[in-house]
Amino acid sequence: METTDVVICGCGPTGAMLSAKLGRHSVQRIILERDEIISTDPRGIALDEDSICCLHACGIYDMVFTDIGQCTGKFKFIGGVHSDLGRKSFTEGGTGHPGFICHKQPAIEKHLRTQINGCSSAQLRVGSTLTSINEDDDWVYATYTDKLGKSKPVRGQFLVGADGKTGFTRKMYLEPRGVALNWKLALPAPEMHPDFLLWAKGYSPQQVYNLFFPIDFRFLCISQRPAVYGRFGLPEDYLWHFEFLVLPEEDGQDMAGQKDA
Image (cartoon, rainbow, N blue to C red; front, top):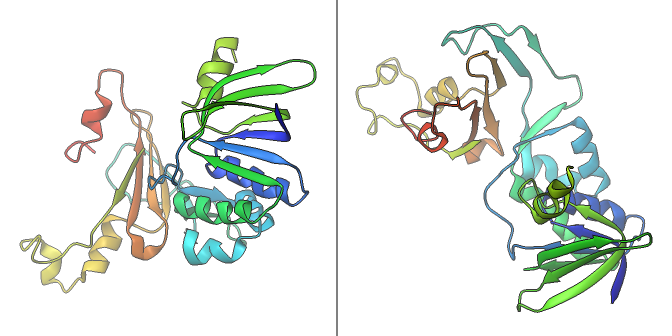
């Protein structure tokens, strides 16, 4: 049976970052990733200061502000039931150091995988679907199906589940043991909304966009429907994250539509 020090299930940001950092210490590891290419859906959008330091430790700090994301400035907590998104917040975060950035998750994964692929102590196996996990006093055993459909066993001293909340590790191994919207926007234009009043006042498309999709990250602290929203990625990407509570009597799919959201 193939043996390694660490078996990592999943090569998203968590699994990829762990693998890159283990590579700094020459730890032998096998990374099993189900998907053959990096997902283009940016599931996560924000990194705090500690995460930025981790990217630095992985050797990709030069990519943080050039390809991965941007410093977001302050994150604001807004209270009350109202529609005034510019109301003074009751607290603001951030320090003199870039406290957090809003990022493109696919870009993080791309650069972390570059570090993994350049490391002789790592084996990234894409197209590998985990099918079983077992353990004894000495080893953790995993079985997976490779991209050709062949079942293969592997064992390690440690197994790390980094395959997400719907992944095999959690759903099929841990849970039996008891254990938001992302939009890519286009700049508004007079020909798209000819009757919009701000055109007559001399506003540019970028200025209108900035009014409706402000730079600072906002947490709407409303008991009936808490929400969070803000930009992520690079400014020219026009990516927007919007997350809010869906009430028990509401349909999540309907609420995610353009009309209700």
